[in-house]
Length: 121
Image (tube, rainbow, N blue to C red):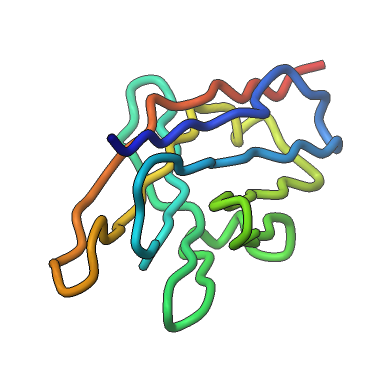
């Protein structure tokens, strides 16, 4: 059974840093793609960063130069390093992954339950 668990959220002051982790556990053949999304109250969920075979992306302009996405393959963990955080970064952050349980099968999508990030003084 595959589990996707986010951790590392919490309260941080503006200008501070926070590192989120997304750990995938279970019987897995390969992780093809991981995306970090966030959803603020009353807003749609948006893709903040992704990491796949084509490399990493930061689709949100406000995250460029501040957020870094990185992967530890041995731990099946993807990190989102958030630097110089702003109040508008406040949201629930979700991890999405496309992975294969067995070789030769198509990838399936899994989501974590999210971790709250609050940026406030």
